[in-house]
Image (cartoon, rainbow, N blue to C red):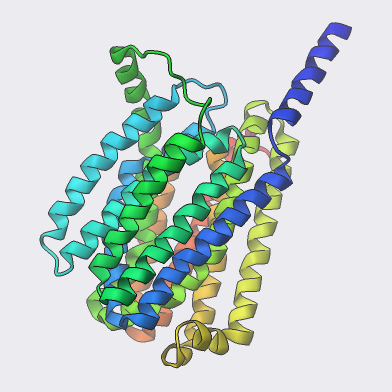
Length: 425
């Protein structure tokens, strides 16, 4: 008995010693996400300030066109990697599978871009995002090992350098295409010099791999992750459905307005993702160990954080929306302060949906999310079809909120069923 107690104590001490505290992990990821979020928003602000509204619309359309394809290809392997508490697969199998899938996705985006009026923008946005998803694979490894300081460093580098590259190119040339080319170049540099070289020494095995065994491992990973890839692409379509309706019915100018205002919610979304990513490995271990009480506590913490952030976003938009828009984008956007409140309300519902999604992913409920995301997409599309013609851009915001509320309800049902005996106790 004493030996058993000593062993249990050493395991607890080892875990405490090898991982940063949850608060420190969340702090590091929040810091990284804060900088990255500010820089992502800054890129839109640069286009709005020094480009044109149509340029913002073209960029938004490039993101909306390429993102669903890349979402399917990236397979959300990060979630599978970070919840792989037993190390069942070699990290290199995760990386190689994602590289292969993203290569096919880029080819598909190139083929699609040929039939659009913004072919160069769509292709460059797709390439830059693909590089981001390769970096995301290394981020997943750092997240699983709870090395959040290094993961935050990657976010900060990618954010700051991308913003600097876009700003410099747009100011010097006035060209969105050259600006996106510069963004692609700096993201490649960070991937090679930092993510794949500096941040992960000692974490990736250098042992020779059996080629056939590696392929079998990747096939198993593909079967495991494919449902999450489908979930991600459905989620991407849901997020972009209002933009498709705006582009089709209202045009690039209105799409630019909506996208600029919606980008202000990016800060909250990235804080949400930072907190969710910091907590997921711990939640996965608790769920796998059958620690229902600990899992419930972290889930409640996630939801409380999401609700608080959402209410704060709505309050700030209602009280200071006009001066914020004037400062950030110029007086031409200030008249849309009312729309900003609607968008922040939709973002608040999205925060809850995203954080509850981290909980069901930590419980490894992958396939169960597919029918839910189909329902969410249908709800968002129906709301956009019904409301946008009458309400304009406010209808687009309402469509986003409708999808998120359906998602929250469905995720709560999935999580309740996943708990032991279908109960929270």
